[in-house]
Length: 198
Image (cartoon, rainbow, N blue to C red; front, side, top):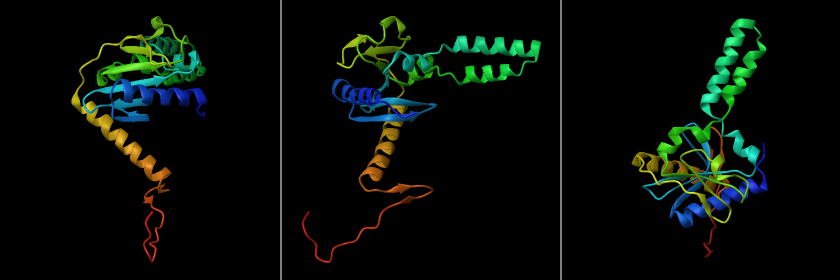
């Protein structure tokens, strides 16, 4: 699924929010830490901030599945499968297992100093935002404040490492035209016989 303009714009605004309002000097988009890819991650070397950009209600609801309800649905389908032998229920079980519960995952809250959903003004109500998450709009107005949590310093180090690796690869690909496969292939560079200033 390709990214929409609004989702990309919200991620850019998320970078700005973390850099200017949370004083993160290390920021990145689409950062993979643990089992999730986060839209925007920033760190100041001590604290870790995670932002999820949500352009639509459906986009928000995809990641907002209560894991307890998922477990209940799976158990119910398994019981029905035992009773009826209906193998179509295997698809239902797989569908439930594939649902994202990112906003209910306590590991995310524990690894971050603050988590926010960034969404257009009026798209989401404060009451819809799960515990441990805050809500900001495109004007950086904090609609739901979240308490700053102390985190293990290793999370900040991991975030910093992951952002640095991602940004290094981005620079090499976009600026130096390095191609990545099994090995990185740098384009050939020819030196001029007479060196001119650039």
